[in-house]
Image (cartoon, rainbow, N blue to C red; front, side, top):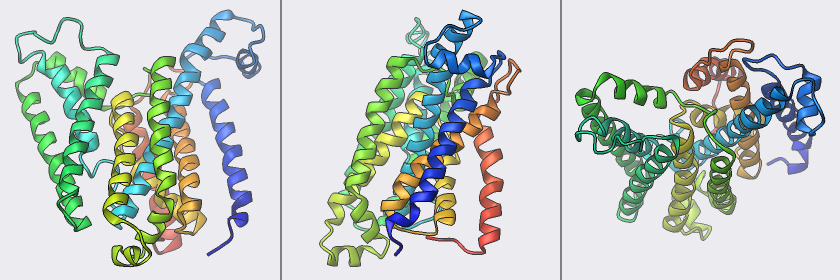
Length: 343
């Protein structure tokens, strides 16, 4: 295993790319703002047009911070799931946590057309969507953790998580079948994912939720390294498998559930970024992988968001589609070039 000092240069480069991506993301958008005025707005200096400063501080900077949090959180939750299940196809969606959030949103949006308007009195808003999505993901997480206390086999737990996801998807399909076209369209737009709908207060709440998830992940680093060699080996090293499994599932639930609640379901990042990171760093040590996937996830989401907002155009593409269109070919190219998968 290489010394952590060996990775000083890659981490420095990643931090530099992250900062550059952040500023590029802020400087580009539907309204053309000179780069020098963007920098002046950030340091609170007078700019040529005061409207530019308003756009940057009330729309672009919150959106860029949201992209950083969403990318980092999804990538880290994907790494946790892949290590816990020792399965390269595992991701934040496998435990049904994101599906639970989608079910909560579907009940709020499409339920209003089924229950004679009881839920339609202005209750469908960004805040209410975040609340019900959080409740949905939390309830599914509780169910999975209850099952986890009874099931010893990790692979069985993975299948149970997929079944929870199938059940929630089936309920959403039934709701979609009976709802009207307007509500169905509203739900579909939510399912596209969005980074630009969060206020500063919502962003602060999301940061707190993700910070707790990251701290739990850091606590579990030693156990994650031991689990890579198998649960029996981890037990021989003194790792309490049941306790650590709960800890990792809880961290994943906070990361993936919180993000889905505030930004909608965003695919690909959680599955692909851990593979990209392992290919480039060529290590399985989670002391390296945890900070690396956090940086890679943030960079990837900033780049995807910059492309999705179609600079100089008023149109914004679904972020969910861009993450897959941009990221999937990169993963395929890396796997073909390396000819094997580091896991």
